[in-house]
Length: 119
Image (tube, rainbow, N blue to C red; front, side, top):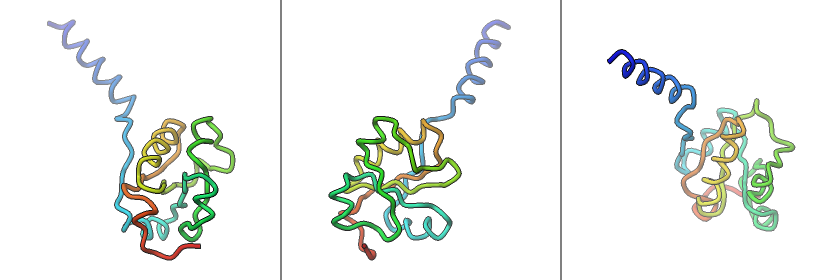
């Protein structure tokens, strides 16, 4: 019985140390509030999509480069709001960035739902 309790306690410690591996997901209406709180919008669409229109002040870091673990220009001291066109690529990008130690929130929708100003 003691051995079982010890194994259960060890398993709980290991799971707690690993974390849940999840990131926060927000609605697109929350992006402006996150920007005001100091988050940088990171648009993970391809450059031609970003150039067509993007949230004012957003930086572009395509998912294709994040898949290659190319994180140049990003700072682990900067929290990010991750957005794409429809919400699919941002999920993958958020998982990659979280695994690499970045602080972020994912946007459940994408630029196709954005009603704010663009540049």
